[in-house]
Image (tube, rainbow, N blue to C red; front, side, top):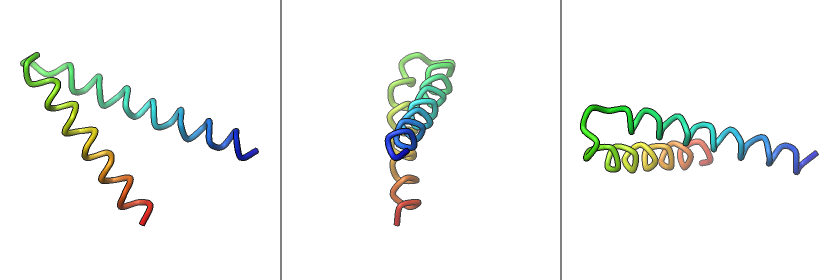
Amino acid sequence: MLINELNHRVKNTLATVQSVAAHSFNIGDPNAAPAAFEARLFALSKTHDVLTR
């Protein structure tokens, strides 16, 4: 049961990252996409830190 819960949470996280990537790389300027993606991943990381405190 614990492994199933872990798998579920990992899949949710990967789906979130996939969505962040899609939003980051659909912006008008392709040169800005990597920075936008990195900033969004950093924000996701900070959000996770807040939730786990």
